[in-house]
Amino acid sequence: MSARITRRWFMKQACRSVGLGICIAGSSVWARDISPNDKIGIGIVGVGGMGTQHLRVLLRNPGAHIRAVCDVDQSRRDEAKARVDDAYKNADCLSYNDFRDLLEQPGIDAILIGTPDHWHIPVSIAACKAGKDVYSEKPLTHTINEGKALIRAVQRYGRVFQTGTQQRSSREFRFACGLARQGKLGKVHTAELHLPTGGSASWVPDTDPPPGLDWDLWLGPAPWAQFNRARHPGGFRSFWDYSGGALTDWGAHHADTAQWGLGTDDTGPIYAEGVGVLPADGISETFDTYDVTLTFANGSKIVTRHPEHGVRFIGTDGWVHVWRGGIEAEPTDLLRETVEIDNEQITMDPSKQQDWRVWASPAHHENWLQCIRTRKRPVCHEEIGHRSITVCHLANLCMRLGRKLQWDPVKEEFVGDDEANRYLFRPYRAPWRL
Picture 1: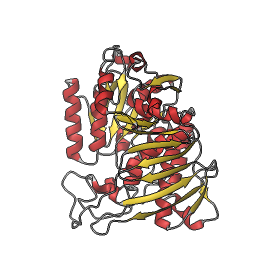
Picture 2 (picture 1 turned 90 degrees about the horizontal axis):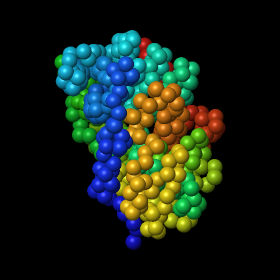
Picture 3 (picture 1 turned 90 degrees about the vertical axis):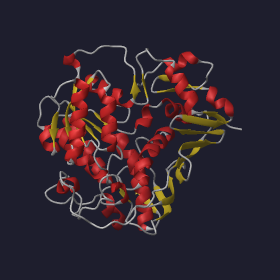
Picture 4 (picture 1 turned 45 degrees about the vertical axis):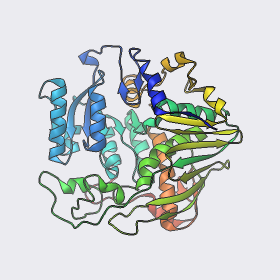
């Protein structure tokens, strides 16, 4: 029987650390006061589902001050502004329809992006050019070439960039990757991505956009389409023009964990092959289920699995399966190991409570804010984020083209395959450009 640590046990241990100035999985406790002059001024672009979650976390962070919100949906931005004004007991939060107006404000040091996927890179690059540091939600890119352009922009303008794959800052994922990287599992040959299915949105007719929604700006670089409530709000992940479906949504998190545990952050697979099932009815376009294998030059593989959740690293001497709030392993003694990752000693052993109180890497937002002050690179900077989401793009492309693809991770192009290389970028609708 495998050893298992559940969410209940995990949170019980975490709660014992209250008052020690740590950050746990987006819910934070700080033991220091920060002067108003040291607070980082933040603008949030996209305050829908994920944007609202980020807003709530940052409002609790004494090192951050939300100075502006932006959304093409007036009802959303008005609600976000009201939430910020209520938290700060004033009416100073600025509110914008167009992110370009927000970027012109000198009191904003950094931008957090919670838009639909096809907007992540245009806003990120514009923010870099405007001298702002950036936190972008996952999936980081909509196409592979967008990631290459982002890396150039971040480095050219000297910005601090964090990708929103927060599992990099979660203790159970860090521990699992430590087991994989330090040989505790023997030679690791497979990382399984256990992903949910895509689901299918029911067909609904096109309509005029609702009052207060700037539909043309919502579409932005994507091809023109008539408004449809299946596209907005929330359903954009079902359409190729805005997303890569569930495979880039949850896959972005788990592929990032897999890349980290396999030690392949600076490279990528050399082959991608698999099959996917598209929805049989409804309005959705992206894959509902998928069975993909991505092979690396050293023979290790990333494979997709249904229906469990999380990432499983399989080695010659054992395996570990990690998900949000839980972890299990075989043999069971693996969970009593101590591993080192990024100079942090981590154990999941309940008998070693003091190890729970040492956090070299705080939660994802705090890591970003600290790096803005120190100008160091965050735990999931732009190059890591780009390589991780590339894994998901390759998986989608081999299924869309219906054949095995050979990938050159150094040149970042398909080998001898003009058709596949045309998918490296999707042209933007004028006047937008990369």
